[in-house]
Amino acid sequence: MVLLFFLAWIIFNGKITWEIVLTGLAISAGLFAFVCRFMDYSVEKEKLLAKKSGRIVKTLGVLLIEMLKANWEVAKRIYNPKHEVEPALITFHTDLKTDYARTVLADCITMTPGTITGELQGDAYTVHCLDKPLGEGLKESSFVKVLRELEAED
Image (cartoon, rainbow, N blue to C red; front, side, top):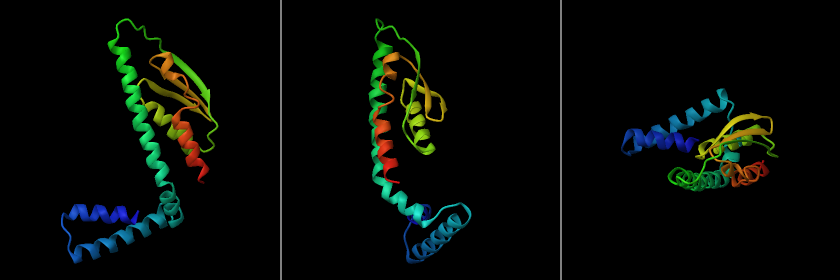
């Protein structure tokens, strides 16, 4: 996080001099100390985030790929006048353990075209699908697999 604060400082200044770098390092360290003290953050959380950064990037990659595939599927349904769309509400349960992973899964489903998470109660999801086949396999989707990997790192 110190690095992000420092990069923001450099970007906002628009140039690099020794004074700007030293002032930026001091301000970044001070902001990090403030965040640790008053916003329930710690160096341990920073280390865990760094450890998980590869999996987080992988999760974002999976999201991007799934969004592209879903865009293609939705476009095919829209532009094919012979295809009759069959909207559906699908309910399924997941074995994800943390509230964070469950919420990320709900968000990933909603960000994927053709599906919207309508409700999340515990481990039960209710998802509205533009077309019934779009909702098949949500329980064992690539999102769930990547989020299980993220949970396993804890």
